[in-house]
Amino acid sequence: MTWLASAKGWAKRLKRDILALWFASRDRRVPWHAKLTAGAVAAYALSPIDLIPDFIPVLGYLDDLLIVPLGIMLAVRLVPEPLMSEFRQDAARWAERPTSRAGFAFIIAIWLCCLAFALWSLWELR
Image (cartoon, rainbow, N blue to C red):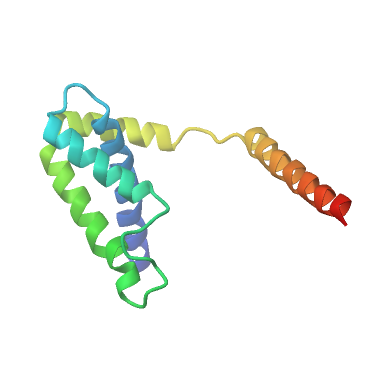
């Protein structure tokens, strides 16, 4: 196995575990402290806002390379193993679901309409 294939597998497992932790944070069977940790880690990993902005050299990617994986490892250890296995299976099924091209086209159409309206409004102000 090449280094690149290994890294892709690791990234895929991280993505699955983030989604599984999101499921864990919403399940009643998970203890409150595990639920809190899982929810915080999943929210941070899925958030577009980083603790350290990516434009800061070296430190910008520190959270992506260290903080997120370590948080995932901690949260996974706090969730009971049988439940974590169930959440991982749910996450794998959820990730394989088909995507909607029609939904994508609809969202793009909305953005284009908003852009056209903004341009029209600016043109009228002239």
